[in-house]
Image (cartoon, rainbow, N blue to C red; front, side, top):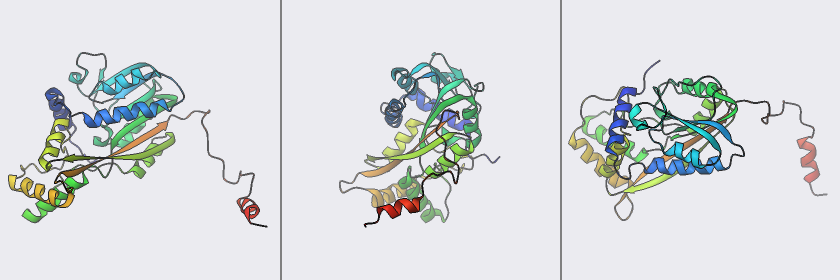
Length: 290
């Protein structure tokens, strides 16, 4: 399988960001954790055993514990440093240390998009869920950082006549639903949410991305350091194309939320073709004025 992301580099950068603990750098995660609590509140059931998958933070597990719907929570992280001495397991992002049918709820927050075998990881999650277990995930959607991507592309093309990939590809909501079905989840649902965050300059946005550990870790990224001239020109283009009347620039953060259930006989199933007991034509006929 072709490698899209440098997994070791991702972990190193996330560790560096975790240890720096820049104030406010977790604003996206905090937003999604709040959304997770709202989504979980609408689920009419309790879960005996929940697991958070490589969240790089204790916040999602704390939200599950506070929900009143989970009896126990297990954290799995890519490095022991993220656990900060708390109980949990350590494993690579794409190799889950979970036995088949061992958990009732699995949560993935902002990590699924940087996997080289996303269908394979979803299959592992599906296998680890007990029948009627729930999977919930939040990951960046395809419109995330479209402004930054466009500005860097335009600047590099203008200066060098070509361009290197500098912003990772993100998930399309339709592809998300298809991946859930492919992995064997029942009742798959995928929806999107968009946040627009404003900054003084492109460099302030990039500072936030570094503080999150969210800079590009594409395997085929250019190893040649980008020039200062490139970033200065990109910042100019960004401001020209994506600024508000007050001069501040906009940055789009799109989120795809995915949910799916491990199949169980109690779940609602679609009717077999031809099993309808009423005719659509007859119903429409009855609606016609007499």
